[in-house]
Length: 170
Image 1 (tube, rainbow, N blue to C red):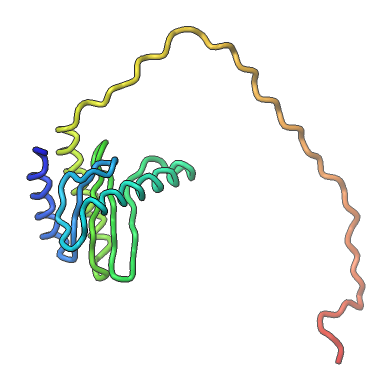
Image 2: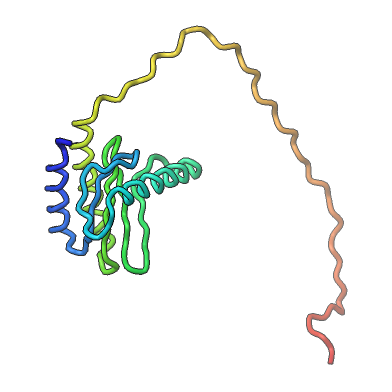
């Protein structure tokens, strides 16, 4: 892929800005590796796992009304795995030691994700839009029926005895 060299250059700049990084991977949302610098970690497996985690994260964001996916952070006993959106079709996954400044990781990861997204999107074919729907009118739908209103019924007042005890007698 032609964009691999510029992505690797971005990884080098990112490592200079965040020395606690131990790996970086750019992958398509389909789980295919675009570029990687992940010593000791198998990139194809990491890309596939990233795609799976991305799928779950997108569904959670949708289900909770949080909008489009932006980032995902996982903290393990020995460090962090952070995944950031990188354009329309890619993600950036960063591996870092436990001592990383998480704020700095997010700042630099978001910036790098945006730059990598620009590189990848420039090489990607344009997004095809689905053809416009036919102009035929669909039959009018009935408006939803109103839910019956509930009315509260009056309850009798609770009575307590003046002799109520809160502890047991010995």
